[in-house]
Image (cartoon, rainbow, N blue to C red):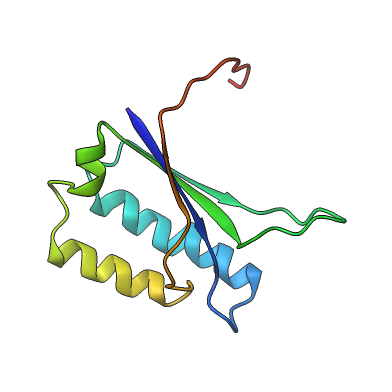
Length: 112
């Protein structure tokens, strides 16, 4: 299994509150129901931390069974991808995101 992480930025003129609300309550559910080969989808919304600046506004984590499933998911075609990208463009900066493709190795997990 692979995990893909992408840093996301909101579109200029959209407040953080608007961005996070739309991303979580509108776009996120749309992604979850549209891409069936997606095994797990997590949104990480940045928290204001005194003295620290983040680059961007959040990080998306998505899990797939393989690199091939991520690069060419069988259940995503133009009729699926176009509406997702059009929806995302309503709130997000569409410049190419920073992307990391990793294989996760959990060393400790006490979260239940």
